[in-house]
Amino acid sequence: MIKDIIVNLERDESLDQLHDYALSVAERFEAHITGVVFGGPNIPAFAQLDFPSQISAEMMAEGELAARAAVARFDTAAKRSLVSNDHHLVLDSEGKARVFSKLARRFDLSVVMQSNPDGVNNDALIEAALFDSGRPVVVVPYIQRDVLNLDRIICCWDGSRTAARAINDALPLLMKAQHVELLIVLSERTSKAQDEMGGPEMAKHLARHKVKIDFRTTFAVDTDVSSAILSHAALCSASMIVMGGYGHSRMREFILGGATRGMLSSMTIPVFMSH
Image (tube, rainbow, N blue to C red):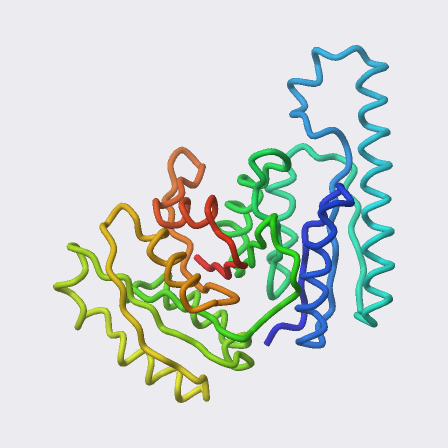
């Protein structure tokens, strides 16, 4: 069940399509949605020490003003959608990834925007939401203009615990989808282990949940799994990808796996991830 959603609001008005997407998810599931926006300058606290106090104060005031404007736009859009909503305004942007991941633990689903090479950098926030919240996250491309579309969802399956967690967490979406594909990306490493991956068995499991499921395989070299997934998604006009978010901890920081990193940098449709 998806009944409680949290979305990281972007302060830039040109990125309001993110809250539009999140609101459409809340509408579809008759869920409550909470918008979180961070004020303050987008500069680490240690770097601000080099700024004169007057300039730092002006940057803080400018950040707060932009954050309050983002909240107002979100509240207006939520009222227009007749969606139950509230918001959190966090004026200190320092450690926002950690703050957001802790907040997200109390929600069914997080919605965040993909990093934009020429704009907002959400890499740390996405990693924290994925690895530290214990909850699934939908990453929305910064080029996204459409609202939630469940016409065709691709579920990536490799037999792992992480993939199983992602598919299970995505069940509320899969049960409402028009078409669902279970996709196995074969490679030199996995092609000999196809039986162990249990693709047909997972397809049967989803069918028992009344999910309309098709089983597909594609091939990729081990280093280019994300490109194979995205190419297949483009060929079948998929509207969402469900996949496990892979990574490992090193010195208290999570290092993304290659396929996860590649997907987050090159995605063209929303990606539902769990770890």
